[in-house]
Length: 201
Image (tube, rainbow, N blue to C red):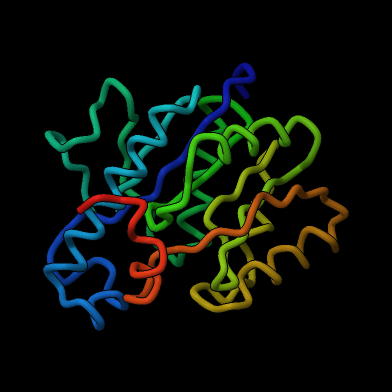
């Protein structure tokens, strides 16, 4: 493992009409859902650039070379095959070759800011994990001090049990975890109406 350089993984979807924010699109339509997702991507990029860390950007399908994510600021990769747990585990393993601790965020949280990520990095000096709980029962951020892939096993992804199941795994293994503030992801039209004012379309 390399020197203690925080590493931030960012998982994003390639912004294509009809393929992003599908649950949100049921309430606002595909075109508006794509506009909202592009706004979320811009917000995520802005916050990520404020973090003093190596930044690893993982696209869902393919690397886009000439997009808004400069290769001067982001190492670009494609997410691996498998379910979300498999993909995150592979990304974490790869990220630990760049430094440690390692944190992952997605691109669905309009409330994310740099202070939350920095708090996570700070707490990983004292804990095995940090988690940012999401209101839907998942998490918007996960960080670990050393690579522990078991935290991704036997999880029913995209359910309200993701967070509780993850915390159960940590308790069974006696791993310490610091909980960051609970935030909301933008998954449905109601979420955007509630929190969308934080990002300008």
